[in-house]
Each structure stands twice: as structure tokens, then as C-alpha cells.
Image (tube, rainbow, N blue to C red; front, side, top):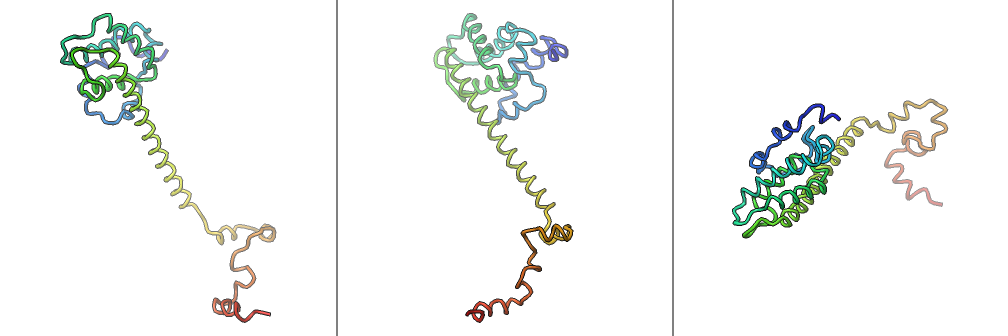
Length: 207
């Protein structure tokens, strides 16, 4: 598979380290990370290197960074870290690595659930659900903006290429003109009368 051919597991860990959590504090739009070219998803990492590497190595390293950062007395145990990492890896296969690092960054900033006294695995999973909803909203908003821009470009292009009916009429041969149910104003009966004649006729052409 392409990912395994181009990268080793150690390359993934080095390219997407937990230290990126600090750098991604500045990220305000998850769609930006969603569109970063060639960023692997959880599912891709699992297929290339196995669930154990994804969960017990990469995801766990990210959670440990959060665990160490949070100023609580009671931290997650190693058993809790393993179980939590497994659940996240299995449940969110479509997240890419940068998106998950961004989640951990926001978790450290207190954007979602807050920790009081201890780090609770359920608070982390609840926060990840909230992050996933934010991700969906950002992606949908970006898609709608792109669609609006595309529609406007197409409309502007069609407007530039549009021709008047008289120009279209000039392209028809006599047979096509005769068969057409529409006629240009210049060939419609009564059109050759002046505007004043037509208005006057409204009052004088009565039986």
C-alpha cells in the first residue's frame, strides 16, 4: 500500500509528533487541516502499520502530552491510556493526524471539557465528540462557500458568453426562421409603427 511504501512507522511519528499541539493552537478552522494534502487518516495508518501502532503508539503519545500538560493531581493510568487510545482509534477512522493533534491542542486550551482534580477519560471522549461536530461544521461551511463561489463564476462566465435574441436570430437560415414560434420585435406585426402611433391606437382603434 502507498503509505507503507513511502513511509516507515518511525517517519509517521517524527512527521506528526505530539509537539505539534503547541503549534496548532493558532488553528481556527479545522477544514484547513482537513485539506492538507497527503495527511493520513487513522484508517490509513491502521491499514498500513496496524491498530497497535496507531493506538498504542501514536494516539497514546498525543494523549500522554495532554495528560502531562493538564495541571491535575490525578493523571490517567497506563491502563486508562491504552483503553482510551484504543477507543479513539477505532471510533474515529476518518480523522486525519493533524486534525487529532488540533483536538489535543484545543483540549489543553480548555475549549471543551475542563478537568478538575483528575483527568477523566470520559471527559476526553465527550470533548472529542464536540470537536468532531466543530469539524463537520467547518467542513460544511467551507464547502458551501466554495459552491457559492463556483456558482457565481459559472454565472459570470455564462453572462459573458450570452448573446442577444437578435444575434441568435441572425444565425438562423430562412427555413429555421419560418419554423420558429418566436420572432424578433422588428419582424412582429405592428412593431414598425411609432410609439406615438401605437399609444394613439389604443384609443382610436375601437369599434
